[in-house]
Image 1 (cartoon, rainbow, N blue to C red):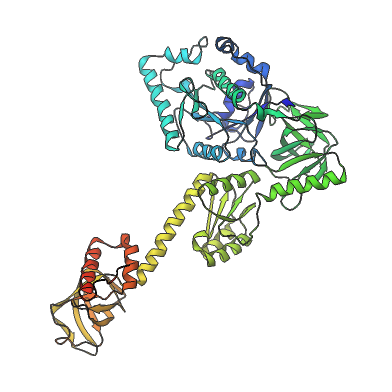
Image 2 (image 1 turned 45 degrees about the horizontal axis):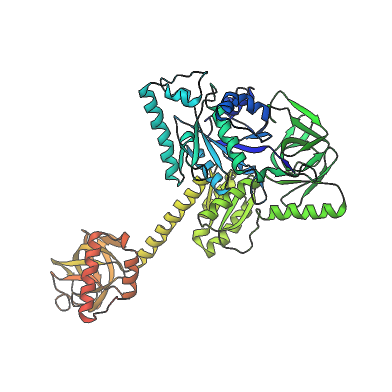
Length: 595
């Protein structure tokens, strides 16, 4: 058994300095070579122990700390999405993560997204509070350690710095996490360490690496034991077409070894891809896999843990996040490994199996898995999970879900698109399709949809009920005494509609509302303050009803119970009238509406 390198993922909001931070460690110019300094693709950097020792030199001596890990495998991710590809069976591939947060900007949507994914995957992480150099008046002395440098700042600047730090601490607390500045952490198993850094000047980077490696040595030693020999196990980070090479896979090998001409099995949506390795390209130390200067070396064999670019035929259908297995090529082993990878894929990609729940889609298997994790945390069931953009077939399935359960009739698409004609069809069929590039926002949108739908259904139900209403018969406005009686009325409180039953204050039903008319216009509904002509069958004005009388809607016990459940939609005056109706009813039947 050998201790492998620590697999470290960097996450955070776009442009908060993830690549710049790694760039400072590598002393390369990856960030400057990319559009707007924002990471465009997944990168992997191998950082050996000697480099860590050089960066942390004086600090190592001061703390008398001995490093035993062989180094770091740093994975740079564009925002949150790529991290979802860092997966192996049963969880995340990353041992640790660095969450990069701009200390001046604080939490942003992808910051929260990253935290949610880290929590769902149970990945321990530390926080790099980046861009301290941009704090107004901040002074940097390259000859001082971070804490000494902080202590040397002017009092007002220290105050501003502490304010920003505790804004971060407060934000973590809102998410149910305890965080503290790294030197104030009392228990690393219960508190997250925040390390203030500057990717520009390099301040705090040695402290960041010290906390990172210290945590790994203390808590991950057993997890770092690996089998260096034997069949490789890995996961795809990115699949891309490259000039002169064809379709290639940037892959993390986390166990075993891999050689040129080895057979590999790659998980697929319908069936596994079986192919032979033509070439293995490994990034040189302190470079990374997507560097435009092609700092790769062709190697005959690689050992875990490392990042490697695999060149092989038939990779066109390979997808980020899929499992990769090395194989000796023996028939029986090949069959077992094909079954193993497809079983692993089947745990994430699930066709509609008659289960209840929303439909979910994503662009990568890791994205799909992350969405599943977060839905399970929120107790939101899903009926199917698949890869790719939203199709007309998906809408057809959604239509059948809607017939059974309106609340679950939704497609949640993470990082996928919907064609205009499919979107038009969804709109015409009134089917709910939600897409977003941030998972937690997708779930928030679904939660809001459920709340809105519940309200819509309740209001729909309320509109079918006899609502509390009190009307007065106006004096001097008898238009017809009977067959039907037509009289001018005013609604004192509540709402009235055609067909509602009416009673007097003795609780006896008199009649129902035949029709309502205001001038030449027929009314379907009337509310408080409205005056109109009311037509009623079976009554005679001057006999059962008189000018100046008050009438009430005659609510049944069944409707009363439902009205109590929907009370939040009734006005204060309607609630008062409902009480009056209950009192009238209970004079004759003391337990009316009880239970």
